[in-house]
Length: 342
Ligand code: Q9C
Ligand code: ZN
Image (cartoon, rainbow, N blue to C red; front, side):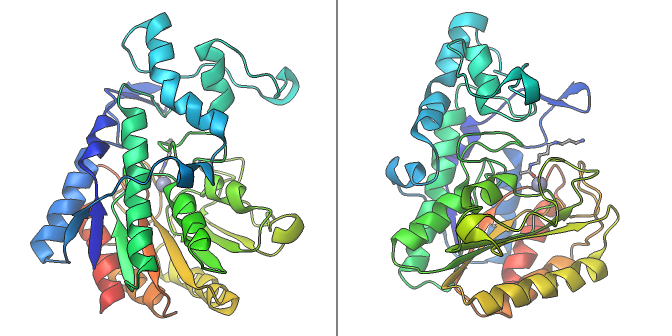
């Protein structure tokens, strides 16, 4: 299987993240990509190709122009006021505080365009986020040209990013941008299967009113897990999209046997949708030793996960999402991809 990659991921390199009441070294760090890449090379999964520049047009098919402008300028605006330290929001438009005004000050704009304080903006964030979208888009082009499966080694991840919101380590929604580009390139129906541990709230929001993209997500129950406010089973889509959004919240402690039962149901639904293409938001933070998660999948389970995804026989674009801090993420990712190819 081909892998697409960009060196520019390393420009997203915050010194700390705010997590669980502490400033700690970020789990979403540049080492993640190096770990996955070195495993891809050592097992000889296939060639690793650089991403091509695709410009802003495909990004603007998914994200609001003002949001993209904000991401592009946030760092320089922040530095003018606060100096060269990581930009974090401290206030949000919530319930009775009002939602509609876009403040002029960068502090207010950070709150307007974000949904958490765990996603630092640095000098290189925009460069890295754009490169990550180009990774997904380069993989999308190869798929459109006839590849059966391609792995987009995206970083930063994307599935929490919505039309005009960033958060959860995500700035641009790489999977959604690729899905939209597949439609624009001639596909009629695209299914997105999100197997990251966290609900893909951004992807859900982007396609919630549409039926040309089916969104199916397995994730930790938002009643007890991030992102808390979206990802419930009664969120089924709206308007034209009713019936085309499917959430499967699972309890803490879920192991492969329980996970697989739900995965089979999800894959059946996807099969009956008859998509032209499948996009997989591939997080391996479902791993038993993931530092921020509470599922119990084992390294060998990811082989079966890949095999199960292959069983619906669709051209498949794998987009890297979460999976943190442990050496095993290399094995886990490569197991999904090689399980798929077996
Ligand atoms: N108590 C992705 O996996 N919050 N993002 C962690 C831990 C951040 C995860 C809180 C989780 C974001 C792409
Ligand atoms: Zn995740």
